[in-house]
Length: 252
Image (cartoon, rainbow, N blue to C red; front, side, top):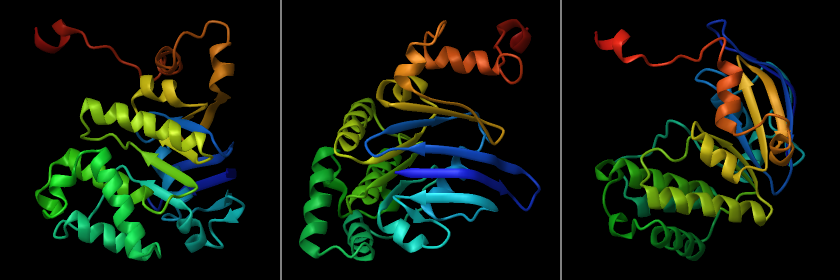
């Protein structure tokens, strides 16, 4: 379970990224966390993962205070960041071994798990190549695998589909739903609103550091006038940031 209360974060530049943000995500939920660029999504996810400090408020991950016990939180959390950094000189095998040892897994378990995901996502032929020489999509598969190798209770996805092919995206969607069915708590940040709507049990929309919508999907679906998450997002931004491409204005 993720519990966030009155969370505030201001960067040294003076940008107020989060303003009294509060929400809860229960075990077995997939929460679609969406907003425009700079809305505060990645800041939230970094704080939840324990990789970024915050100014005030509280963040509990399965009852563990992120600020007080960040290492304990990392033990039960899997995180796919928006801008991943991996050791490009290592092979995937070496990288999985490194991650697995940090996670205190034994050699047999590390091998069994990376072998399963390599077969699932079809990157077994690249296990002995340097990561820096592997395609973007396959690097993303390696990153997803490393985030799940320790079977975490809390899973944080920040734009996890970058570079993936259509088949892998469908597979990833099915995998995420199966993880939730097995009690995992999933926070999923993405600009792919149709996919978010398909797999999420809860939707949170953040704008300028403020939560403006936080509802279960079934409640959204029963709201008068609601047709789709995409149309809702368009309506919310119609008067401020939403723009429309006009061919003649661009090229005539």
